[in-house]
Image 1 (cartoon, rainbow, N blue to C red):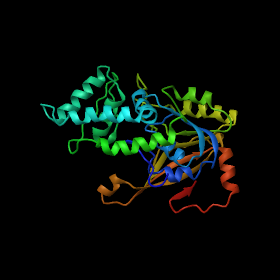
Image 2: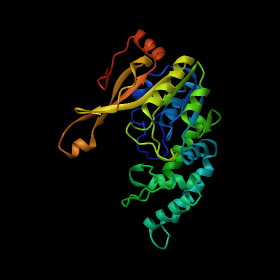
Image 3: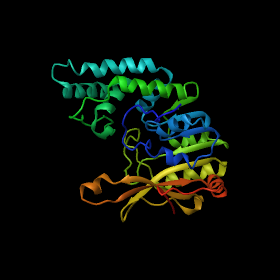
Image 4: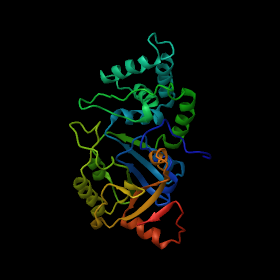
Length: 302
């Protein structure tokens, strides 16, 4: 498939734009890609576009997000039709399109956590940013400047994603450690866990805190099982570093990928570049180092 890598909808924290850099550090071929913190599965989609794996396991504790991906891949027409119904309804809603968002949000929080409702909320909310309050209710506000992604645009991408992954993808909404238990030699685990500093809360399906020590210890399991992995975990901008490096005992190699100019710094009249860290497991690092590779100006090795 030629052209841009398809994506369903804007999603804050997505690695879609960094995917070409991340894929440089993946093996050319492997058995299965597992994404324990998939979000909207940008890396799975990019990897499938290059036909690097035979199977793909998409997992996220936020089950409604997984439901969007499952329906997009296995029943694309149904997702498009149901999303179109919800999206179109806002234009005839008596109280206006903003109140329609709150109406759908209320229905979602009352239990109608369908793929179409989740997709509409995500397509219409501010910055494509999923936010929940402590009681588990979705509480993000609508973007007042727009009506959300047009169903026709979503349809093109959904059908493209379905053609890449239908019959190859498996889905779950499990704790990431259960996905680690499933991993086998020959698989690749790509992880984009919550940013460090996000606090743990009562219901981590929605507030996805992640303890540093707990996560590092869990990665040791993959090392013991001889399973390859790649982790997007922390970063830096200007003179500021975000998060603590993973322990040296994991024997990973850390690379810094250029994520572009910081939008916040630009607003302040600065031109600081954001670098996002990529940790590569020992087996993959050895392969990378054994093959002549010109490091792009967009990357730095730490």
